[in-house]
Amino acid sequence: MTRLAQLQSWVDQVAALTQCDSVHWCTGTEEENRELIQQQLKTGGLIELNQETHPGCYLHRSDPADVARVEQLTFVCTSNKEDAGRNNNWMEPSAARARMNELFSGCMQGRTLYVIPYCMGPIDSPLSRCGVEITDSPYVVVNMRLMTRMGNPALRRIEKEGRFVRGLHSIGTLDPERRFIMHFPESLEIQSFGSGYGGNALLGKKCHALRIASHQARSEGWLAEHMLILGVENPQGEVHYIAAAFPSACGKTNLAMLIPPASYPGWKVWTIGDDICWMRLGDDGRFWAINPEAGFFGVAPGTSQETNANAMAMLHKDTIFTNVGLTADNQPWWEGKDSNRPVTDWQGRPYDPSKGPAAHPNSRFTVSSSRCPSYSEKAEASEGVPISAIIFGGRRERLVPLVLESKSWGHGVLLGAAMASETTAAATGAVGTVRRDPMAMLPFCGYNFADYWTHWLSFGQRPDQLPKIFHVNWFRKDTDHSFMWPGFGENMRVLDWIIQRCSGKAAAVETAIGMVPDQSSLNLEGLGIPTATLQALLEVNTKDWLAEMANISDYLDSYGSRTPAALMEQCHRVTADLS
Ligand code: GTP
Ligand code: SPV
Ligand code: MN
Image (tube, rainbow, N blue to C red; front, side, top):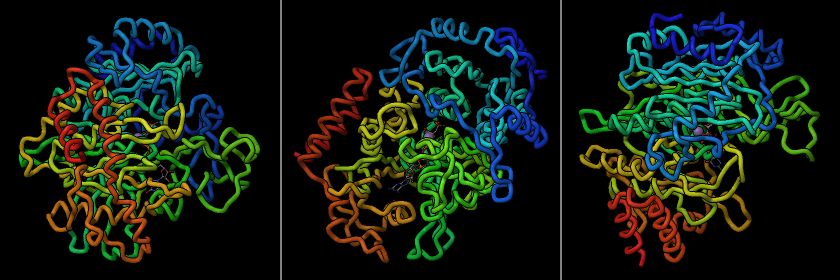
């Protein structure tokens, strides 16, 4: 129940449409959470893990045909098709509503309808935004409780503001043929049907905090980005904040929780967020950023003591695992975790390597940010943190150097717009194909990319205060197909160079595509990387880059007359400098 009439009447309307059995208003309390878990243990929606080694931890097995975001079934329904842009699937709003009404009609018979009021961002921050998700999935409720500030405090803010994003979700019958994720950014609405998985179902995350928020941010003059936020503290106690955009499953969580190697005594990396960043220009001309989320929905495979000890430290307690394998003593297990052996795979079958991995490649953990040893108290600051550098990056086996610095804000926007990356298991479809993924926002930008680039360029007014823009690539491979750069904690060396560049210290060499480190300016102490490998990692091959620039130019041009001329000019300048 709420005293906000428009919220109450929407809930009543949805209850009537879906013919749910009962309505439950989520309060977010411990007790409510315990009850929801108990109930799911009974229905099999959750499976208890070893409570001695993993107190408060549970496993969820999703439907085997519902394990990732579904980009081909995700739509942005603006009244004008051009406003959604060719980066989005589009459906005319009234046709989309009719389609969804049909699907939602009677879909909650025999089920409870949960009303989840949530706040994206610190509850008292002017940068935060609220929403209400209606769902018939108790799994969604317990995940939203970890991922957002959910329950009574959020409801109080919603009642005060009277403005919130309306998210309607039902798992339906999980039939992939009856699955749609619809966005109506003009009326702040989301309707998601037929999937219980992550980004399709936890509507505060990609649907609200990126697709709806990016649309809203454009009209209100801020940015909603697929970026981690971290703070690097040097031995003198100074902290520089960095926001970094990498596509799904390309290293945001890992970078956000980086532990500096032994050659960086006294240095510390603080985690603010691992997936989403909302930022706005402050009166001081700097970008101030918040993490709208309150938890991590992280990729399990590859997470280990060696690669991400901070993540491992938080996953022993109060964590929900989705689609991982199990050991004989009921502990969660995934490829790359440790030397334990799985006995059960993610589908609950006896583990048989010939049938594939024990954990699904997009298996995930959900855990509260407060469990992360490197979580920064600044993540709760209502004003956010000031950003010194923005990093774009992709998964590129070839061509793209380890690190590049842009020559100006406009050139930095080109580095972002020209991003490309190999596809991963985070979305259904082929894995490993290189595709353009501007600013890591291809699946998440709630409006036409051409307008989005114009919006990015519009911030270039006070370049003295703006963050510097960089591009990184941790994923170069040699002819043996092994990674050339050690990555993970060693990425600290690149962060160090970036911060030094921000304070005008480290040396760089100017190339046509951007500034690259002078070999002596990267700290490689204790790394033992061969000089030839380093040279290859920093090389700019003119012939290959001319081909890349031609491809980028065609791509940007494919957005038509809305593509900003200033962006095309940046592209032509780089091509001319290469020639
Ligand atoms: P989403 O949650 O899907 O947005 O993903 P993410 O960007 O947070 O990716 P994450 O940090 O979870 O990393 C995904 C995969 O990339 C994991 O299997 C990691 O082990 C691997 N990875 C992360 N950082 C590095 C790195 O520096 N080098 C290499 N080689 N692999 C990395
Ligand atoms: C991603 O795919 O970028 C994720 C996971 O962070 S999901 O919540 O499924 O979008
Ligand atoms: Mn993500």
